[in-house]
Length: 151
Image 1: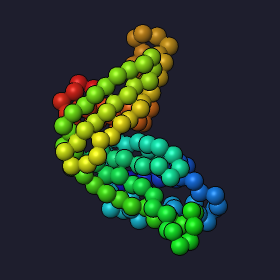
Image 2: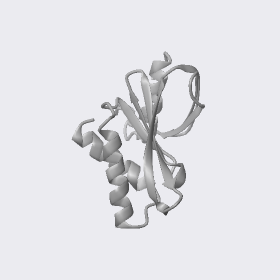
Image 3: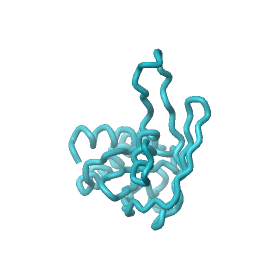
Image 4: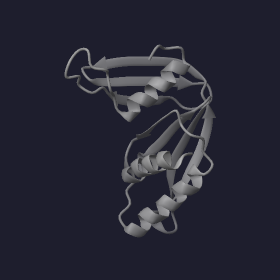
């Protein structure tokens, strides 16, 4: 993973975690860097959830990578390890709906649990302006393209 990508993803993921001290953040950053050394450059990514439910999802090629936190029970909430898992992208169903500028995507997979992603499309000042959106929406569109959608 490129250094700029690592910094952007690491910052987003670490900011979503409940880390109450500088030492805890440094330890989590070290854990993230060790995991990032093994990961490919992502085509799309997003941090979904916050606190204990925070997950960093990456799409690279035909794979989804997830990074989650696992508390180390013996030492308390701030001590954690980053757990990486990978799954082949084998989407069996996609559902989409939109409410104003919010989007709701539901993906079903052959080899992992279902995934729901809530995205945000940014307001366009003029109709001819290009549509822009947040990271979760970019991730959802990348997954939808793999399922044959023109996202």
